[in-house]
Length: 153
Length: 192
Picture 1 (tube, chains in turn red, cyan):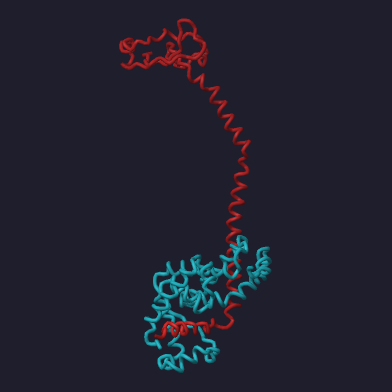
Picture 2 (cartoon, rainbow over the protein chains, first blue to last red):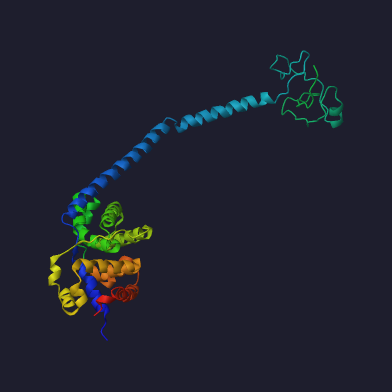
């Protein structure tokens, strides 16, 4: 039995004679060059953008940023102990921490750690904060603490 | 021993940025690649756009081409892959475009034989025959159409097709056999 796929293959092979229109290759190359130029321009625009971004951030040099960060840390380290000092309860109502209001040393009566005392303190609120101890300069009888009481002036 | 790649000198120059050398490669391979892509898509505009993409990709990727295969095999692989990806994304078939037929067909022995023994072939005008053949090709799946286009139309040997597609020769032959049977059904009226 004749293999009729052979005839079909012969028919399909006739498509080898199909040709694109005349001059297609030259037109194709013109379009191709145009496309390559557009792609180059797009790449240049992208490259230019990243270059400008790089220039902008160049002003923020690593040393400058590190220096600024270091200065900030130093400032915090200096200010922290001062901020920890308890405000001084003096008549007239100043609650400035000792030292900042010109006085020294006397921080009033030592604060009780007994929650019952906090409750019973005159004018005080019914709450008790655990006393926070100062880290240095603890004079006998004095413990710089964060008071949980609001003292009536 | 492998035959030296005749495109090697042009490829070497193009890699160094010689655009004239790449233009030469385009001129050399354009017609064959046109035939491949056109028979995959049956549409001239799609073919033109795809070829632009194919040669652009080849140009951008040229630095990575190591010469393990010939340039021809390499660019054929790119063309087949991009055509298949395009066809997968294309929702519906575009209107068919017919290309001119070289007058040399009148002297083709297969054409003479077919027209002498088969009334349907003889009586069908060339344009109508083109339409019927294009329709039949489009009925095939993309994978089967690819092997028919490469083997039957482009005349690429089985071994080369297997390298282009990255499949075994057995797979190429099996797909061809199945595709021919399918075409036989689609082109029933032209059976001998």
